[in-house]
Length: 318
Ligand code: FAD
Image (spheres, rainbow, N blue to C red):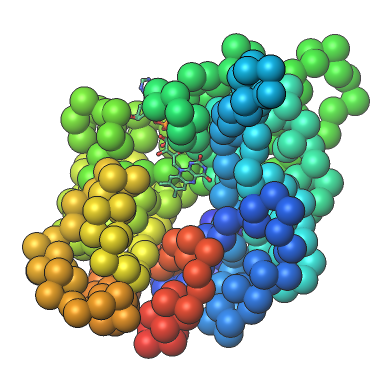
């Protein structure tokens, strides 16, 4: 079922959902299932599965030559989505990225997803390759998420890349997109970021999931600006319980976000990671309660491979 249908059926009740990462290449899917299992108690209507860019690895040969190889360390998003759907009877939302894919490869992935009975996609530009630092589009692919959204929306109308195709059938994906309460790091300002977000909605995105944030005021302001700009689709806040002291620097570095003073001071004073984690969980519960009272459609948690902290938060709320 589509994410938007789940929201309609919920009739204003806040739902619980979360995001998982595909296992690292060579790892068993059982570990992922074991992480998901304890969260099923909170009846998520859908689970997101991330997509990971390829990375460059270098190998020095005995003759001194340096070999550059491309490796995708967490492959299998499409297969993982199908496996989770079958195992837990839950809808899955594969993340689709522009980076590294031609339009034809994207079309083929969409056809696979359609045959697997997957009804949703979260369409993203994707992160740059780590060692490149700057996003580079595939020569036959898309440079921005709006164009990927356009491709999925076209396929929903039965428009395949091969224009000779006559006996067409259409897909029927519900398309989600990413939003940034603290602005995307490449955007010149938040006004421009919201104009691009509006463009993504105009091209066919039916709901927005936000980057994680730790200060609800950021979300409330972002939502207000979106509505003022005419973005009327549901906005789902993304949350993560902070679980280690090191995340005080790692999260802002990776996700270009600000942590509120009160949280930073409390975590600094925590004697160890166990104490920091309790503070992080408590903070996330309070954030979630306020967002629920505000009437958000879904609370969407970034589990980042570790379910226990998210389970503790959900247990306090759902
Ligand atoms: P876009 O919407 O294309 O925006 C990228 C930048 O370009 C922004 O600064 C935007 O303001 C600007 N822009 C947008 N449209 C235009 C335009 N038409 N002309 C000029 N400028 C424009 N990354 C992954 O690799 N895998 C994942 O699974 C993944 N999941 C994510 C899930 C969520 C909920 C979020 C919030 C992010 C996720 N990301 C993921 C990270 C995301 O791919 C990066 O933040 C990426 O840098 C931007 O992606 P986007 O879809 O927001 O890009």
